[in-house]
Image 1 (cartoon, protein in one colour):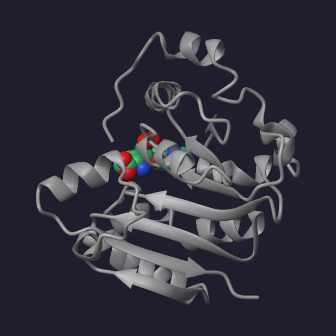
Image 2 (cartoon, rainbow, N blue to C red):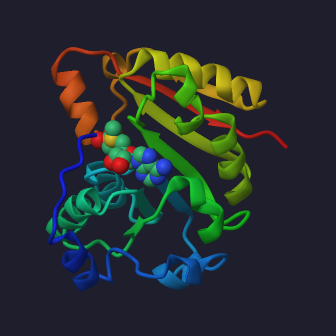
Image 3 (cartoon, rainbow, N blue to C red):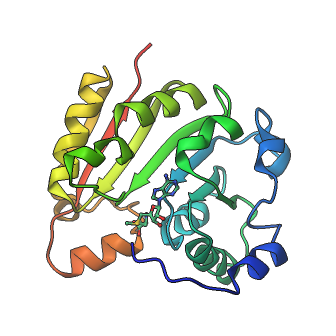
Length: 214
Ligand code: SAM
């Protein structure tokens, strides 16, 4: 994603601590405290401009959602979406790096993890940066419940092929694989910004659901 510098982003983030949580490490092991209930917690790593996480929160009021994003100039767009949706109680945002999830979450904190249109990092020397690389799968396993799931969508065939192999080598169970999600178009599919863009161009959307094994 092209990231434009937004000098006002820092001020916007400080002005909205109710949406972009300022000290997420305080909730490690106790995310129920943030949401005021013990509903399941689903997180999206690389939530971009927030259409998916906001849409999921509106669709599923009994699930808590955290959108995790690396860049301040992008997370402010997501915060604006959350505000435009009426600031649902069950969605909040974290300005953190997905590589650092273990600083903020402990085993069993997270019930499901979403990856949507993650940066493909096509050069093999950059494979370790892909969010479905073995090192990330290990981090996700350490914060998910036993037999937790990763749901992954992408337009990028190379990244999808790589991810199928990566989750299989890791010993995960593939519960669902779609090579053209929009042909079946599940009723509850919530589109991301990238999904809208690529599907409008007629590109197939690939999707998988992979589950950790005991
Ligand atoms: N998921 C959104 C969508 O489908 O429209 C955005 C996709 S965009 C290609 C990938 C997003 O992941 C960017 O906003 C990027 O800043 C974020 N990202 C990449 N690496 C990340 C990391 N290690 N931790 C958190 N966010 C990351």
